[in-house]
Image 1 (tube, one colour):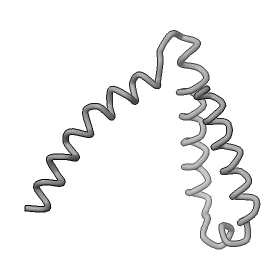
Image 2 (cartoon, helix red, strand yellow):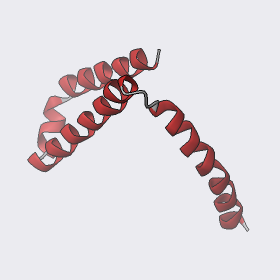
Image 3 (cartoon, one colour):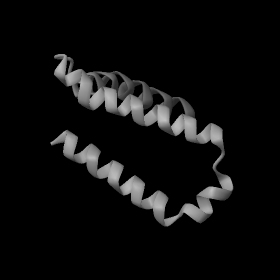
Length: 81
């Protein structure tokens, strides 16, 4: 299910880039292309290679989010008061 969602997000991102290529071409440099390629390679490793090795990246994200959310609550109260 997660792989389908990631695939849909990638397809939508590709369609967005193809439809807005004129606007993106003016702002996009070679450095940005390299960073984008590295990001997609990391996503590929996370969602395709690691589960085959027995490592679940979704559980890692859930654990990380579970630790970040309480900190965000504390930051919100810190900035409000």
